[in-house]
Length: 291
Image (cartoon, rainbow, N blue to C red; front, side, top):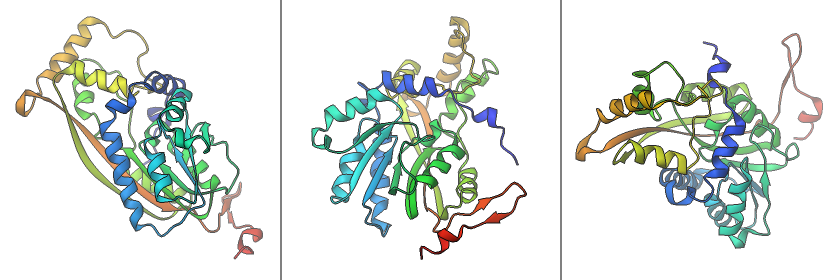
């Protein structure tokens, strides 16, 4: 089935503004994001790689940068993020990292040379990107057999919020997350080798709707769907949403919010093929001669 590109389209300016605004509050609130980063770091135990160059794509305030540098002390570890104020925060909170590059850039347009990176580490960032554009860039900048390690959120993420809004109107209030199987297909489409994708579930609880929405705002997690309703929601509709959410309180009278966490890794192709206008596939001779 062909995905509707408009359904997944994002307002990248809104993404950047939301994370810039959240730069000062992100570290105290992004508990789940840090746990996912720790899980990704632990999974590197099973990867036989000693990279010379690592890029943390979507590095945010730099939580994973220190851990990556500690794991690979001889490597150049770079951080890239679309939000300049996140990078400023990363620089301030980690003075040890001043000698390492922090780059303002988008995962869909990475300002690095072709085949210049041994490993890409990308923690809960792909959901803010056009998947195919990001994977094309990852493939471009990775060396042959370079490692892509990522996590992102799947369709069950914030499902309680999505279902509550459906009782109010037909608008897009939570942007669409890509399914795990579609991510695997996309990696194959971009010629990544031996892709592995798995999913986990997590749940956060809140005292009320205001607590939930405040935490989402403090980590920069806004509705960035390009087709979202851009006007004011209005008090009546918001109160209907609030009532729908409150009706689903769980144990200890807490609001429960689901997250589907998708983990994946793959290796950049040793030889890249290129599809011509007639649909044929060719592999450049210069690629083959390097082995």
